[in-house]
Length: 261
Image (cartoon, rainbow, N blue to C red; front, top):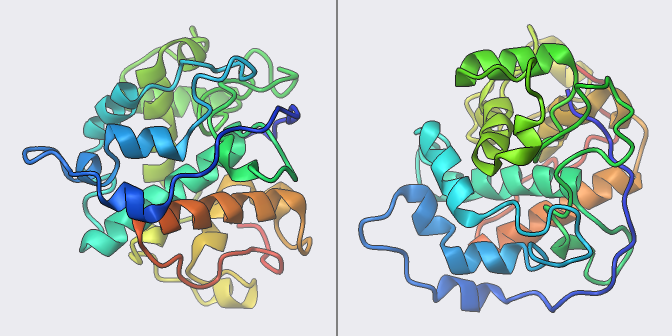
């Protein structure tokens, strides 16, 4: 569903804000559930390199664009059955998308470089429908399905995903919200525990947890291959955001022994 991106090695960034500081930020009294968890200040602390000139996507992924896109999907980050589920869903969404758009591997500040890219570096996967946006939406079929859901001609104008930040975020949340295959749950259903595994899933190592979301994102490439840098990166981002949102990450974070859906 999404492309794997080559990473650039970028200079070190500012230190991570502590969870205590983030939790002290007051949520807007009349704000939505998502805005009450991720305020402008929290968003800036999550993604401290959003305006770093070393990042090709510098200045693109604005907070307002994220909030506007999230409002298009009223259940996103709001329907998990409680604040803990909502926080975990947002942490998981940004954990996966930060990996897809991240800029470093192995650096001390590795998990502070999410949202550094807005399109695939090589542009070689399924051109002209190569990876764009927070999930690196890839392939004509996916552009068609996302465009149909959003009321947009993304097949005729795929660059909308890398030129309009609201549309870019909408494609990512669409992917998150929508079951991507006959036997696959949506990422949303997994993280809020609405997914009931079939009889075949446990035998294939697919059990509820963040690891299944990685399987949905890139199972054909990353699953069943033991520990690797890509999965470590996805987990690291997720755990960082869970810490910032003061929520437990849960069990079954990796997909080292899972078979793809």
